[in-house]
Every structure is written in C-alpha cells, then in structure tokens.
Amino acid sequence: SGGVASGTFVGIAGNEQISSGGLVSGATVSGGTEHVFGGTILGTTLIAGSEYVYTSGLASGTVVSPNGKLFVFAGSVGSNTVLTGGYEYLFSAGVGRGTVVDSGAVVQVLSAGMVSGAVVYGGGQETVLSGGNASGTIVSGGFDLVFGHALDAVLVGGNSTVRERVAARAFEMQAARPTAVLPRQDLMIERRY
Image 1 (spheres, rainbow, N blue to C red):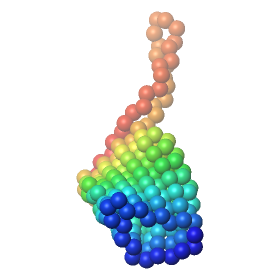
Image 2 (cartoon, rainbow, N blue to C red; image 1 turned 30 degrees about the vertical axis):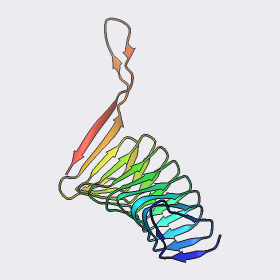
Image 3 (cartoon, rainbow, N blue to C red; image 1 turned 90 degrees about the vertical axis):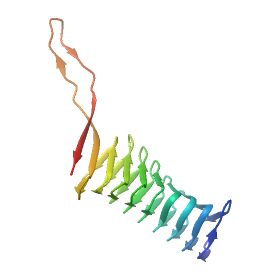
C-alpha cells in the first residue's frame, strides 16, 4: 500500500499486484498478469496476458495488443485505453472512458457496465450487451453492436455501422375473436455511413 514502481516487466506466468494507494507506471506485460486492487496503473503495455482492475482501481493509458485482455470490474475505471488488438471487458459497474478501438480489437460492455467517449475505427468493434450502456461513441469505419442502451452514437467516415436492438411497442390485432395483444418484439435496426 502506498508503494510506487516504474518500468516493471511481467513475463510468462508472472504476477504483479497493485494494492490500494499503490502506483505503477510504464509496466510491460508479456504473458503475465496484473491485478489492480484499488491502486493506480499508468501506461501499461499489454503485449500478451491479462490486466484485472478491481474496486476503486484505475488503469489509465493501457495499450492492449492482439494477445492482451483488460478486465474492468465493479467500481473501477479503465481510462484512455488503446486497443490495437485484443479485448477490453467492462463488467457490472465497471467504467471505460475514452477507449480507442483499432482494427481487430473489441470492447465489450456487459450488463450494468458503461463505456463513454469510445472511438471505433475500421475493423474494430464495440459490443454493448443487454443491460450495458454506451454514451458518445464515435464510429469511424468500425462496427457498433448494441443490445443494451446507447446514447448519442455518431457515425463518421466510410464503412461505419451501428446496429441497435429497439423494443417495438406491443400492438393489438383485430380479428373476429376478441382483441388479442401480441407480445412485444425486439427489432434490430442498422445505420450505415
């Protein structure tokens, strides 16, 4: 707790833990694992392996390569993450801010997770699952698949797609028999630029 480290290297089967009040900057993870328990980690390069951010933890400026995975759990924040490949998962009450999603990368927002200000470039994907939330996503040639809630998604550039699930209103069907109310159907709508 309260410790500071800089430029650490976490190799295969290695494990680095950052406790509450701790700070690590400029770490490189190549096959190992980082766990952030209420501490702060800045500018990690995640070549391969995983980074886990738990309650009150902050991971800022993490660069995730194709073989890397970043997990952001309840009460924690992943800020200014750059996905040059690989995955970022935002779990319930986990928050991602300013995520950049490049070709071959995916940011996935699970139920009650939140991503804001993401930019999705060509070949990248943002997936917002049921109960998940996205705000202010900019889709610049990428793909935004929304089963949850999305606010103010903007499409710019060519080959941009936003596909959203929208709840259609229940409606009544008039027939010879008494009026029947059909169950509500969820529709998928797609916007392209």
